[in-house]
Image (cartoon, rainbow, N blue to C red; front, top):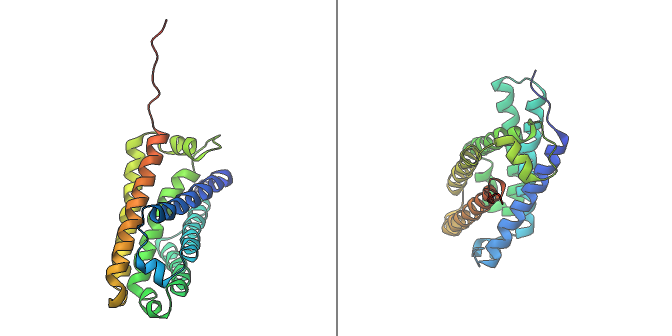
Length: 211
């Protein structure tokens, strides 16, 4: 039987993800990198909420698959159902001009891959035996080395880039360039945040000479 997910690890992850998403948008605002697409068309707070709900879908799938055996068919069905819920919320935030494209089968399949990459990433956090009370120590216990951690984060970021490229194809031409720039800014800030987090988790402890 698969290992059960750790409730404490899940709470730590939710906290970390919420901080990561909030910090991403704070940095975008600070660097004046929130595009006109965000300012003129949608509410950033509503978009942040959709992003959090999407991550929670990934966490719930991780928890579910850690506790039960699932066939690939059943898993894909769950991924697509979660994708549909996320894109329904996303469509409500983006507005009617975007809804039909966001709900297309290609967009939902891309979101399913996005979810699967996160599900696999978060499962490693939630399946480790750890007495940790912080994201940093939990990550250290789960991944052991910076190389291992960064390789898993790279897969997550790759899936986000692929999702952006898929969604871009569904965006009305009027907004396409603005949407593309916004996605690039978001991905850059996400990469920076994970890199900083990894540096904090796996920073070397200086050894002082014996006296």
